[in-house]
Length: 448
Ligand SMILES: [Zn+2]
Ligand SMILES: [Zn+2]
Image 1 (cartoon, rainbow, N blue to C red):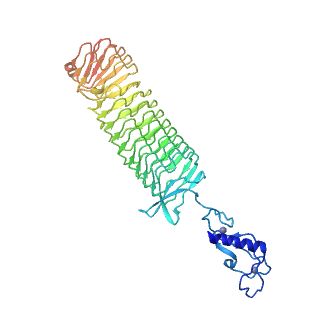
Image 2 (image 1 turned 60 degrees about the vertical axis):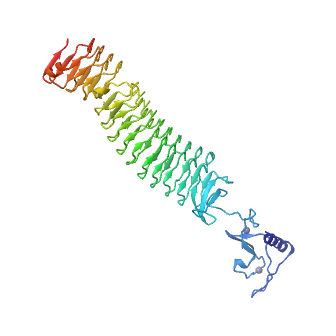
Image 3 (image 1 turned 90 degrees about the horizontal axis):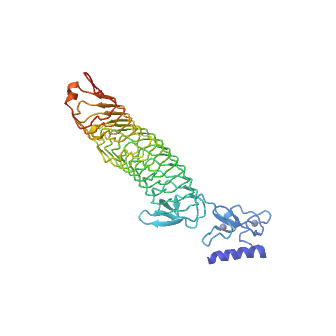
């Protein structure tokens, strides 16, 4: 500090008072006369000699030659360095890794943040939890490859952020890391990420597409909830489940391929995906949680594979375009009346134990694939039902099972007339139907 003042003083004296002579005037033989102004390069500053025929060739011999000193702010020479990273960020030294974490914006005022790979000679390896949370004027962030951890909520609420690079060494996209980043249109998840933690991208309402690399094996709940423009996403083969509400409210998602590795589709997974027209549930799936496809109002057809043992409540409730239902299993458990509530199913191909469509005016065709019993009132008041197909295994048709199906004329029975006559039927099972003809394998039985 004192030394710097002294140099400043000396240089002023030199410039204003006079002519200041250095020692050795070597061969050239003139007295140096030092310019008032500073010269500088990226590292040093000095005064040039302005005397004619100056013999100094080495800049370090010029007057006042020294390294820039920014310890008190700007250097005395007025040099302002240019950095290829953002100046002013807040750092935290970590003894364990002998390097730095980024704690936050600090005094930086840039909206385009470039994080350095080193700080004070040590590597920068991590962006701390909440480091840039709610920094809503930030527009872009570059993160160097040496950063291997990005903490929870690190960029949550950065509502102006349009661009971010996630470095290759990162393995986890933490909880809420990008939650509410409503301006990011695309993001690349590097190959090497294994886990996308819950709510990581929740509310990224401008995100139109995202590619998830095969290295990802877990996607947490609500990860993409309310990504309202998300139209294109691939799920890597190998993920074991679709977590709760992962895609809830993704109203632009028109189709998705669920990988064959998935065994469970959890509650609310696709709830409110109102553009979803086509979805294939893989054979390995054993359970569909509650509200899984609730209010998927564009879904027209669904096939429930034979491995599914239970469908929880309201799974397809409010699927207002769902006309074709195929349930392949034979002992599937349906959790109450709400599963297909509000679905205008026209064609149902189901086992007998889930044949329960009382008061459904949309229903036209029912194919029972297996089972022994048609329950009481199973198809009662289905006013547009025209045909029913029954397997030979049917042994009982319940009370009022087909009652008031005024258009029902055709029953196809995959057994003989003799087998049909052995079926026990409940009271009014066919009361006020359209005049049934039962087509058996060896002839017809006419109830008209
Ligand atoms: Zn000179
Ligand atoms: Zn300087």
